[in-house]
Length: 93
Image (cartoon, rainbow, N blue to C red; front, side, top):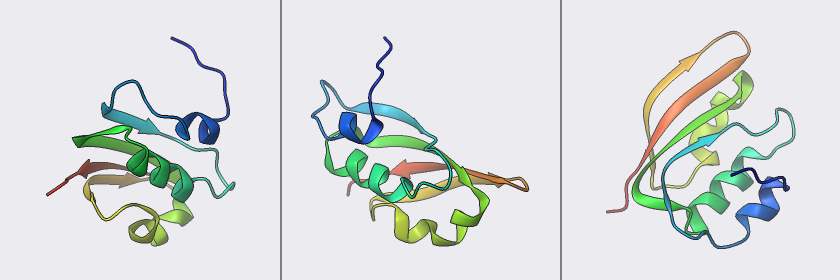
């Protein structure tokens, strides 16, 4: 299935079914990370124990804990000179 649509507009609708795994790689330097994470969490897109793979510009690593919902916990991370990536485990206790 191929959907061509603005990601924020797409995430503002209700999903047919929540996902177990989400790959999130918003365009760099457009301040989309926090908005996208919030829409995923609040919009019903994620199953209770979903995993989220994030890829972003390296400089955002410092603000990560404030950019994602409280239910998301860092599982693994890796970085290069320009890119930071991490695997997040969602936990709804």
